[in-house]
Image (cartoon, rainbow, N blue to C red; front, side):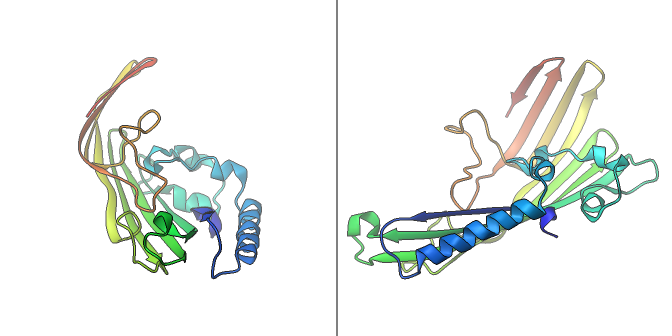
Length: 219
């Protein structure tokens, strides 16, 4: 089912290519149009930059479609424990001509980079949550081999536990421990670095405090 996954398509073309770029671009445009037909806007709008920010608790009272059954899987009769599954596939065609101002003397250099993610979000009651995401990234066709930002086969992108040590109507304090993605502001200092094929992750402890309309985070 296409609706289960987030699919990205992009390309960067400079100069000539061994491939027929016009045909490739037409095919990519056709794929994007088809995805817009099969994936409703209300579903794609739910996908976040960091997938653990998504909330599917409202699906417990929704119609039992295939998509809903994957995004919200009750584990107990009272629905206090539930599991949410998801995934993502990103394909990017890149073609550099005279890369690095021709210093490497390799001419046209077309290649394909791919990134695949699957994740699981386990909620145990209202205070404990475990999120895990596995990533695999590949590069195919680059004449001078993959760059450090292109390829990493089967790695853990996120694996953390959230515990709400304080939770009431006015305030909440959550402690997050483990491997996690971080993205703040414009992303100049701390970011997941979405542009390259390999996103960044961080290992550590994070405190998240909320009181009414104010938020405070400590890393």
